Image (cartoon, rainbow, N blue to C red; front, side, top):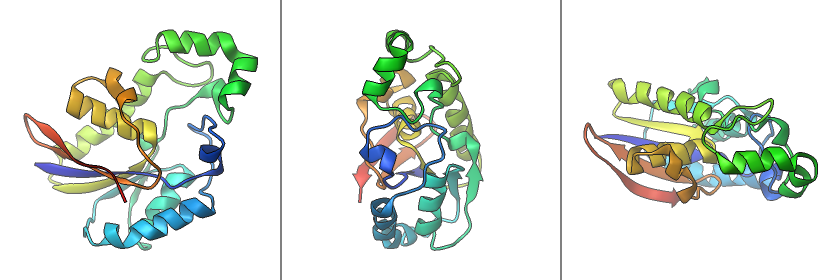
Length: 194
């Protein structure tokens, strides 16, 4: 079986303020940098040489801290979902300015494309295509530093067989979730490990 270490980036100010932060390039805050530094020794003890990160600052900065300045590959394929007109807004702000769009998204979260953004299905396809490439390679153990939505999508697809179940998972900032995947089965080894 292959093992994926799925790591959500450290905390940002937008996380604290419960803002929709998909493609918005927000850096880690001080707590986020501390979280990554606290996880660094555990991560380095894994001896992983195949590390992939979203190209957004919050993930790339987390990967840089965790890797101790070592090499990792940056890719836009591991970005969070593009929330379009909801980007950088909190729930109250969205409901004030874009309640109709938010309600349409709520009716069909999988397929509704948020104006100026993307649909959940589009995000899932790009993330799962990238992960599929890792699984088809000869890499036995890899780390992916990404975002809550991406990690939940990977878990739902490989463990539950459907991206529709993505919302059943909660992924904490700067934690390791270990997923083992074989040819016919997958299992969750740890969730939100610190």
